[in-house]
Amino acid sequence: MAQNILERNNVKVSGQGTQPMLFAHGFGCDQNMWRFVTPAFEADYQIVLFDYVGSGKSDLQAYDPQRYTELTGYAQDILDICTALDLKDTILVGHSVSSTIGILAAIASPQFFERLILVTPSPRYINDPPDYVGGFERSDIEGLLDIMEKNYIGWANFLAPVIMKNEDRPELTQELETSFCSTDPVIANRFARATFYGDNRSDLAKVTLPSLILQCSEDAIAPTEVGEYMHRHLPESTLKLMQATGHCPHMSHPQETIALMKAYLNVPLPLS
Image (cartoon, rainbow, N blue to C red; front, side, top):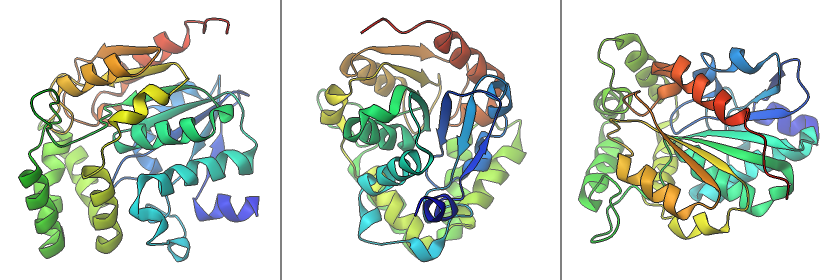
């Protein structure tokens, strides 16, 4: 059973350390997006990479439309991997929607995890006036998902540069666009709906683990107000506003991402 899960999610384990660092990729991406960051941690940690079912080189035969209609289905992927590898004291590093997915996994089974590193997180992408700025009007999201259904390639061409920003590095935008286009459009649309229509604000208070929030300074997907909201509502959280711009600092600004992660991990956790 454990081997099935490792194959299902294309799990790769490396590194010389014993404490696990589990890296969870964002929407439309795969584990390869972490390649600029993980080498910096391989000497000290056990690195665990994977692809969600429906992404990357996961087993598409294992895709269950009902399970993956909600983000809890993706959180179960993480918990299945933790169980299969018998992970303990795991540092969960989640990008974008995987920050929320990681939070859901940590609430459901905190025994697997030591702390969370949340890269450009958002608990809610749609504005909820007067008190919450998510970055999008509902009509914006409806329009994006409509384009996604009718013209998936056009949607990828439009969204990739918005997400990546950093126009001086077009190869990163191209990589993200290619990643979007390599995902089955029906699966991608279902994941997008779970992501962009989700509202996980009420889950933040349930988190019992310490967390680091990495907030980019110019992020069209998760504006700075979102990072500040996360920090206010997530117990034991540390917020770092990055010089990095865009929504994928682990790709566009890996050195800053690594430095902030290492500085956070070098501070001992308070004794409980």
